[in-house]
Image 1 (spheres, rainbow, N blue to C red):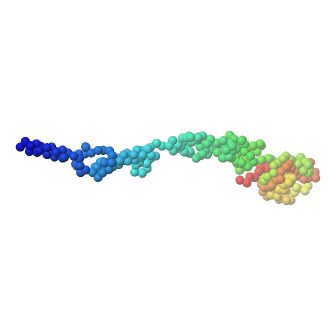
Image 2 (cartoon, rainbow, N blue to C red):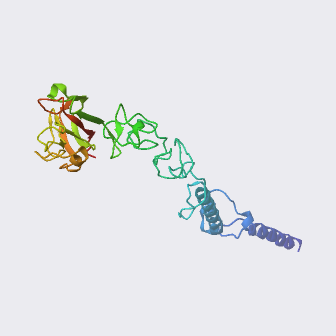
Image 3 (cartoon, rainbow, N blue to C red):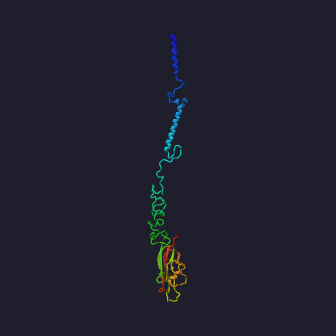
Length: 296
């Protein structure tokens, strides 16, 4: 009996030891499963792989979020954002009323004559632009005087002895008077305008006329008329009709063919006179002005 009982106990102990041996298909708890090594890639660790995939996805989302924040106005979905820093020069523009960057001025308009040009520069007298207080291109006003045929407001805009003519342009304007007693006989006794520049001129008669005879000389039909003889110029219109004399200077002047005439002059001294064999009994004079004719 004792031997049999001992054998039974041994068998029970052997069985108990056998039941705790590890097996390839044993059901270990999750907490007892190794977390590193090749075992994490087996099918029995699907839960762990799923958990690892979830962590990877979360990390990717975080990376995308970080990337979207640091990119220039683009979020993680690829759409353009409206927030973020603005370029320091984005609002700088000539005409916004505020001097920006290298602008010399900015008055917010495109008026070229108010002290600030449409290019946001301060006008100067040699910029090749008609701006500022200039009367014409880089002349007049506070700039240098204007040359022949440039625009003017008054004589101060024009250089030399030029005047601001009837067309508001700088022109040479000179007066000619031919005294029929003192400038009589030939060109040698004529009245002279020295060094008249070449160009186109308009002659305009002033109310005047002269006579070669005075009453009671005969014939009584001899009287006043308007005529000027000049070097390099023949007046065909600024004169009274040929062979007709008038009782006084005013009547002669009112019967002129034309009070003005335009002519081209080659330049040099302009001398005008009246031809007469005996000048002592002459009276009166003819007077006219000369002014450049500008093309523009």
